[in-house]
Length: 197
Length: 197
Image 1: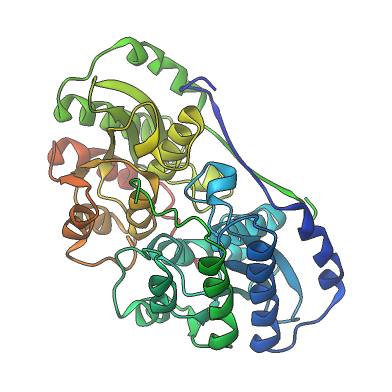
Image 2: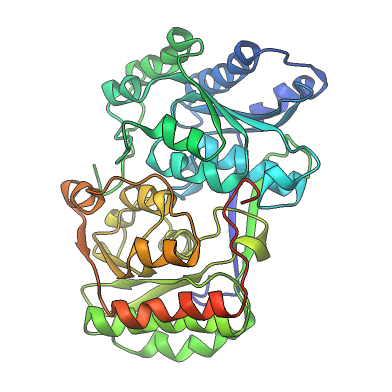
């Protein structure tokens, strides 16, 4: 690519097994626990198929319980450090709903569900995306135990999101959500913090 | 796009006028001030051409002073809330150098130069990108004065980056860097914080 190319095309391929989740598009996910179960399944699959880091995320319509989009960690595979599960799920949703501000879309009450609390980048991305709520599984500290740096975050990050009109649910199926992290470590998965660390 | 499409293609078109900067690829930018002047010029152009928000960024090779990649804010135009100048410049650099961790690339000493201090998302993206230093022009407070929410950030964010081996330079040409923000406000440019705000 020419460094001054007019078009930056960040192409991120989701793994082929993502097709197995097609049935989920016709399901209704009535509770945050059922939505979290899907995010954890995505993280689990990503680890067992060795297709990326131990993180899964999905965007749901809170009004209907429908699945809108999903993402798994693809940093190493895509060659882009922004390819976290949450960034991909949010960007997919914006692509599908054709707006940078999901709160103004045809589905104005969207919910990001993520198997692990967002890192500093994804946390920062949430208010700009226009989602109305965030559901988190494992804690930041669970990811840090495995060796991931989650970046510079205020301890009061849930309150900071709430201030911006975004409801935060934590510790939803935390134990189940921590398992993909542990499996990843056991498999010897790459810890790909930036700066060669 | 199918919600379970295997390929997320975040396509962001830079404005056509970006071609005017082609000559910069053959220039050497020996100082951080000369690099900042380019980032400010990008922000300036983006405002006067009404092609996006009042933010410009570029990645330079600290060892040689060469320009590697550049970005301007394209949130509204691209339909993706991640399309901040810094995210685009970093992703372009990763595309060009073919790695998610620029510290392991053929140009291991890269520097992100941004006309305004990074928002919470871009701040979080910096450690994962593999750049070794960040040069900032206008302050977070200068952007906030215009109406932009810069997100939940630790006051100690420069120290947090330094801890991760990333040198931070602040207030470089701050006065000149603040002008695009003020011009944007004067022009009635869209303040596109998420959540309909």
